[in-house]
Amino acid sequence: MVVIFSHFASGCFRHSVFSLSKIYNHHLLHYTFQNPIHNFSSTCLRFRTRVTNSSEAICIEENGGSSGAADVIRSPNLVALEYADLNLPLICEEVGNIRVRQHVNPLSSTLSVPAEVPDWNDVFRDSSLPLIVDIGCGSGRFLLWLAKRNFGSNYLGLEIRKKLVTRANFWAKELNLLNSHFMFANATISFQQLASSYPGPLVLVSVLCPDPHFKKRHHKRRVLQKPLVDSIVDNLASGGQVFVQSDVHEVAVDMRNQFDIVSDMLHIDTVDPNFGCDPDGWLVSNPMGIRTEREVHAELEGAKMYRRMYQKRT
Image 1 (cartoon, rainbow, N blue to C red):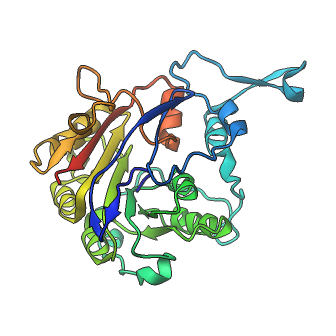
Image 2: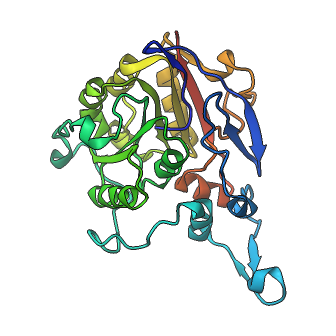
């Protein structure tokens, strides 16, 4: 799932090289061989802004900033600005205007059937490339933004809301991104067979702002359970990474606890001190170069994001 990747030589995963650069409060990862963000639109940069306080109002003056009334930018508008350079079509002819349930029970019988393993050579132009998997990819914008900037990796989004998957694949086709694909799949059921069948190395898995399922009796519905954690760690290439984040502290702590106890996984700040953490051990900034849609909404409301990144021992 993402723009963090490592170098390969003689078909073997070797090591990751990180350096941080700040652009409008975003920390971007730079790469030795290819920087997927170096062509980032300066126009988009002028508008990409992080709102860290709900009392802050963001306004864009009409008529190119001259005179006239100002329009307050709401959360959906900020998402549109965040992903403006994708220039996605608003309507997907296959599904029309999409309205989906925000909360879906992953334990329902309809989601208990394993997804069929695709022919990876049909899915991606080059199935030998490093694979990034985003579990619970939502609309897919986040993954498409990353895929557009790094053709040296393949990007796979897993989502349990079928209409979102259909639209995301429509967008990928419109953008001619042959390194991105989205699947209607319950990661808890299907991740193992999908990851183990992929020809190339799995180099990063992200679980970003998953459904919190607040009620205690529904905690079993949370996506990151021990079997999935074990499957991620087992299939991850040596030196591969896992990135988790949530604006719900309880959920973030739950994800953190599950990876903290895995002896093969090291938190990234112990590998690279450039990844700074606050006193409680949370990453102080987003290393991805782009915020998820939920992250945009949460930060507009003044919420804190709790982030952890892990790297598998080499």
